[in-house]
Structure formats: structure tokens, C-alpha cells
Image 1 (tube, rainbow, N blue to C red):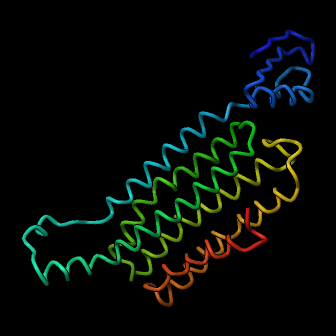
Image 2 (cartoon, rainbow, N blue to C red; image 1 turned 90 degrees about the horizontal axis):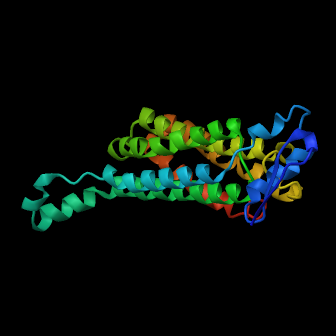
Length: 238
């Protein structure tokens, strides 16, 4: 049910939608609006941003399977030759599962964060689009890693992709929760701080993998196993 009141609170039209938290959020922020009514113009509905994000995550996660090459000549292979070929595919398969699993962690984190957001603004939208840029890039860097995991530059490119993604996700949360900018004013400090602590995990692991890439490139991939292990610890658990 929607009620429209043309009151004189800062000379604005207040729209209250009992079924829409975004409109309730706008009404609350109207209390601190500027006299010219300019403050509310920056609050935007977050529903479209969530839909776009879910679609891009789904597309990128599906596209990962294309990174596994299946040559046309496999139809002619039999017996031991076929078995040898299938066993030789363990590296690209491992990289595929790793990337799918990492994107799954990012999507779950994204889903939980946006569950706390009540609206968005122009800066937050651009931060979110930055996240989606590096999500879309994951199939490309995954394909590189599957083909040349022993090359240190390839390892650095993959780590750089994840590092940028992790930093932007962390920035997303920091921006939205600073002064309860985009979240409910009653959101507890404990939840906010836990989200901030979690934001350091992926960048730290990516930096560690990047350093290991110079020493033992083929082993750097295993460093990402630390991400779910650290996230499962009590100080970071949600």
C-alpha cells in the first residue's frame, strides 16, 4: 500500500511504501534533507543493482566451464591414450573448481552485504560496477591459469584480478556502512566491524599468492585455500 503526502518537510513530497524498504529509507533521510531538497536526490533504488549483479555473477560462473578445452581429436582416442588425456586435464579442472568456488564465496558475501543495504547512491553504484568488472574478467584469468599455471606472470595476473575484486568488495562495505550511509541506522557496530575484518582476508591471501608466484609459481594456486579456512574462524564468521 502506498500513501503520498505533500507535506512541507523541507518542501518535499514524501512517499511512504509500506512494502518497500527503499521508500521507508528515503522518508527517514528526508528528516535531514537540505532546505533546497537536494539530499534525497542521491538515494536510488537498490533492486536493479542487485538484479544486475546476480545476472553477471551467474554469467561469469557459467562461462568458467568454457575454460576447459576439449580438442576435437578426442573422439579418436581409445584405451590408454584416452586415459592419459583425461588425466592430463586435472590442472584446468582444478583451476575451474577453484575459480567457481572463489566466485561463489564472493557471491555469498555480496548477497549478505546487500541484504543489509536499504538503498544505493551514485558512488556506490560505480563501486559495485567495478566489482562486476573484475567478476566478468575471472573466466579470462582462469583460462590463462589453466593453460600456464607454472608461469609467474600468469599467477600475478590471476592474483591481481582477485586482489582488485577483494579490495572493491571491502570498499563497498566500508562506503555503505560509514556513518550508516546506506544501511539501517540500527545496524550493530559488531556486524559492521566483522564485515570490515572479513574484507582484509582476500587481499591478504592474494598478496601472499603473488609473493609465492616469484618463488614457486606452480604452488601459488594453493594459497587461495586459506580464504575459506580463515573465513570459517570465529572472528570472521557470519
